[in-house]
Image 1 (cartoon, rainbow, N blue to C red):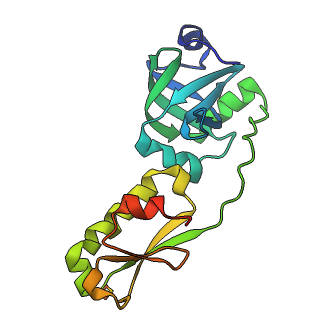
Image 2 (cartoon, helix red, strand yellow):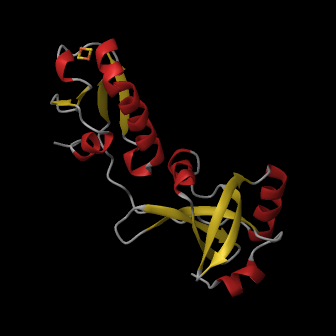
Length: 191
Ligand code: FES
C-alpha cells in the first residue's frame, strides 16, 4: 500500500524527526526498470524512498528484503528523499520484529541473471601515460556508481601490443578500442 507522506509520518514506527525505521522491502524502480531507491515497510505501511545515486549500489550489494534499516529522509511530493541509510541496531530491530510480527518480505521481480563481463585496460607505461590511468579509474568509478553494471568488472592488464594507438582497452568480445572514453567502452560493452 503506497501512502502520502502526511499519513506515513504518523504510521512510521518510533519516528525520530526525519529518521524512518522499517524493513527493506525491495528496490523502487523507474518505469524503465532502473533502481531509484527503496521500498520501506513500516508496520502495515509501505513508503517509497528515493536514494541519491551514491547510495544505490548498496541496495544491490548489501541489503536483502526483510533487513531492518533506518533512513534519514525528508518528504518530497508523495515520496521521501533519503540522505543516508544505515542498518538498524539489532536490539531495535528485535523490538520492531516483535511489534509487527514476521512480515513476508516483498518479493522483487526476478531479474534475469546477467553474464559477468570484464573490460581490460592496458596498464603499461605508454598507455597509462597517454591517459590510460585516468580511463581505468573513471571506468572503475562508473561501474561502482551504477547498480545496473554490477555484473561488469574492470581489470588492468599488460601491454596489448598496440602502444602507438593507446590508451587501449579490450572489450569482453575481444575487440580492442583505441583512445576510447569510459562512456564509449560502456556503450560498446555487449557488442
Ligand atoms: S603499452 Fe599499452 S598497448 Fe602497449
